[in-house]
Length: 223
Image (cartoon, rainbow, N blue to C red; front, top):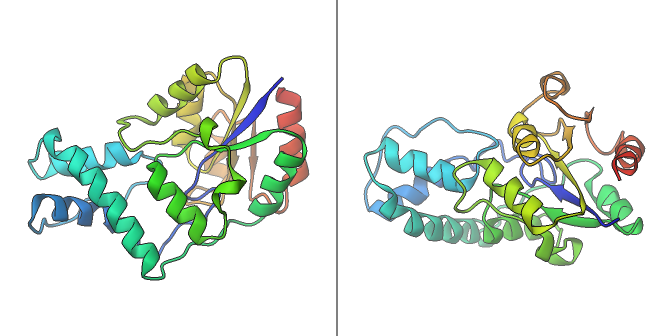
């Protein structure tokens, strides 16, 4: 049976940018509408880009007619930031995990709240070029208002395959459950092992570096 591992990006494949990054959505909306907006909304984790932009627009009294332009501006800002030298780091054990998955004949793919452009820019900046992932099996959240929209799209597009979500937030688990997929939690984002153990995860690990064998054995058992 074909097995596809659907990796989250922020906090899972890549360490979060705690020195910044959350303000990019706010800046994108400001650039879109052409004026400063204060104060920014609190940063959130696990929400897709589409939802975050929609919430910011609504908070400041703008309707969704601005959404398409805001998405384009967000992509532009992500590219600008990368060209200016902003780089992310792979989370511990990620390269070994991706290599081990591929060696077993399973597919490494993405299921992320980011747009395709933003995901690719972030990953390439961290040294994970496009050759690491099956882009035909990857799913993105540029327009999604709920993360479950992305997981349901993946389940519909890949019927009959074993799909496993690996992510770092309870929202990943909620979205996986909505589409009938198992979730493996890694505590390399803002949520702790204890937080993730309160979800429906089939396995929770601190990181991939110290628990890769356990993660691979769990996936093998799900096939």
